Image (cartoon, rainbow, N blue to C red):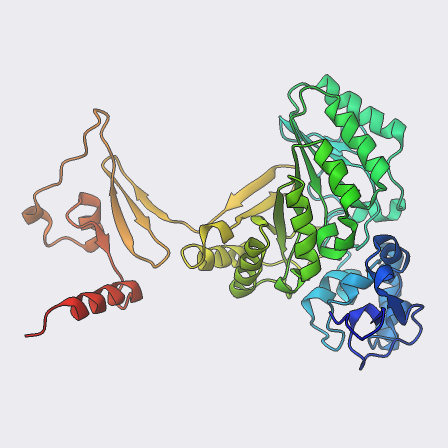
Length: 439
C-alpha cells in the first residue's frame, strides 16, 4: 500500500493512481485519518453505488447485487478495499468482500442456521453446545461483512450490540453452569465494540470463578488492524488469559499493518490463532494455504483450523468438496513445518460440532504390527508391543520370502515398502556414492 507521497496524505484507499475514484467521498485522506479506526469505520463502502466508480458493473449485475445487499448487507473498510485488485474480476480478496450474483441465485440452497446454533441457545445470544464451553454473540456489527459468513442470518437484525440486560442474562446462565470454563466472545465482531463496553463484558466474565479462559473471535487484525491500539491491548491484558482467534484466508491479507496488529496483541500477552475458511476461488489450492500459513508463522500467528465452508444459504459458490481439503492437508504434511499444518475440520450440520478430517495414514492395524503410510507414500511396518511389554517375534523369513510386499510388511519380514523414484532415497544414494572412496 503506497503511503509515501512527500506530503501528509495518502491516495484513495491506497490504490494506485490509474483507478477512478468517481462518486467516493474521500479521494485523499491524511495519514492520521487513515490510521484512525474510527475514520475507517465512518468511511466504509456500504453499497454497490459506492463501488461503481472503482469497478465496472453492468446494469443487470448492479440490479442483482442491489437485491443481494437488500438481503445481506455490505460493508468494506477503506483499508481492506486497498488490498483488492479492482481490475481483476476473480480477485480472492474481492470475493470475500464484494457481493456476488451467486449469492442471489443460490439463495434456495443451504440453510440460515445449518449448525443449529439457535437450537442450542438457552438464553438469547448464548450457544452452549460443548460441555465445558459456550459462545456469546455480543454484537451484530462487523467492519467487514464477509460474504462467506456463517451468521449472515443476523445481519438483518441491525448492527446493535447486546444490551447490559441481555449480557446479564448470559452471565447468569454461565454462573449457574459451573462446568463452563471456556467462553468464546463472538458476533458480529466484538472488537468493533467501544473499549469500555468490551471491558464490561470481560469484567463480567472474570467475576465468575469457574471461567478460566476467554477467547475472542475477530477479523479485526485482518480487516481493521488499526483498531488494535494501545488502549485496547491494555484492556485485554488486564483480564487474561485471553486468546484471540482471527481469520486470515489469503497470503495477501498478511500485510505489514496486520503483522503489527498481531504483534501488539502478542506483546500484551495475548496469543493469536488463525482459523481460515476453505473457499473456492480464494484459497482452494495447496500452495496458497502453504504460503498463507508460512507467512502467519513469520508473524508469530499459529495456523489453528482450516474450516470447511458451512452450508449457509447463498454460499454454494464458495463451497469445495471435502476431498479438496484432504488434498490440501496431504500436500502440507511433511512438505512444510508441522507448525504450519492446521487441523482441517468440518462443523457438521445439525449441531454435531467440529469433526477433524485428515488423509488416511493408517492402512492396517493388527495385534502384532500396524501398517502406516508417510507423506511420500512409503509404507512402513510399525511393530507393536505385546501385553507383557515385549515386542512381537518376527517370523522365519524363509517362510514368507515369496509372499507379497504388503504381507511381508504385516509379518515384519521387511520394515518398509518404498515407491520407485523416491527423491529422498535418491538423495541418500547420491550422498553415499559421493562419500565412497573411488577405486
